[in-house]
Amino acid sequence: MNLFTQYLKDFFNLLFPDLCIVCNSHLVNQEDLICTKCLYDLPKTNYHKELDNPVSQLFWGRTKVEYATGFFTFSKGSDYQTMMHKFKYHGNKEIGYVLGKSFGNQIRNSVFNQVDVIIPVPLHKSKLKKRGYNQSEWIAKGLSEALLKPLDVKSFIRSVATETQTRKSRFDRWKNVENIFKITNENALRGKHVLLVDDVVTTGSTFEACANAILEIEDTKISIATLAVA
Ligand SMILES: [Zn+2]
Image 1 (cartoon, rainbow, N blue to C red):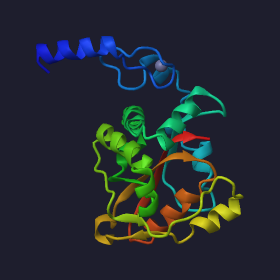
Image 2 (image 1 turned 45 degrees about the horizontal axis):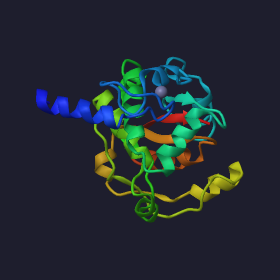
Image 3 (image 1 turned 90 degrees about the vertical axis):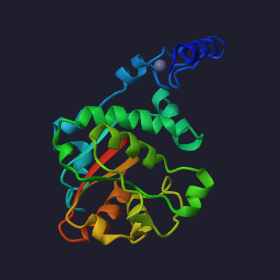
Image 4 (image 1 turned 135 degrees about the vertical axis):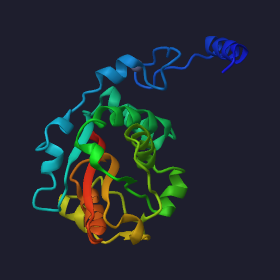
């Protein structure tokens, strides 16, 4: 950016300041959507340092997962829950990218650097059309950039649209997502250690269904990264 555009940008910011999406304070130059303090204050889990953790334990006896982690936890009514809501339902897709990058920087020097490819939990095309973006893909973009691992959004898709999971029991959730995912390019995934990415984990049923579908391919391994743990 040359001096003149920087000047214009500063002037514009003076008139229309960018506000932190969590606390509404004015953002300074290097900050993007979320201020440094709110990023710092995120209730981080640090599960990447502790391999037997509440996220990995979700999959015990259900499917084979190498490593699993979540970036932060949030509680009902918290500012971070509002942030996740803006991210998922109000078009603020860049929040996923910013948090995904921060998440990636946190786990870059851990076992998670062993993965070969990053795959977001896919949305069905009807849902994608309605929402306009796949929120998990934006997190995966940020993770891919920080971890220096390729992103693949083509080889694995959701072939069946399902009803919303929110009001279902764990068994109903599992039944609801069983066999709804489809591999479209087996060769691209054979022999790969896949990092599956989603925005929130609750029961783990969606991750489980994705993992089971991918593990059908020879020599694949699955690890899991979720932005938030509910
Ligand atoms: Zn803030």
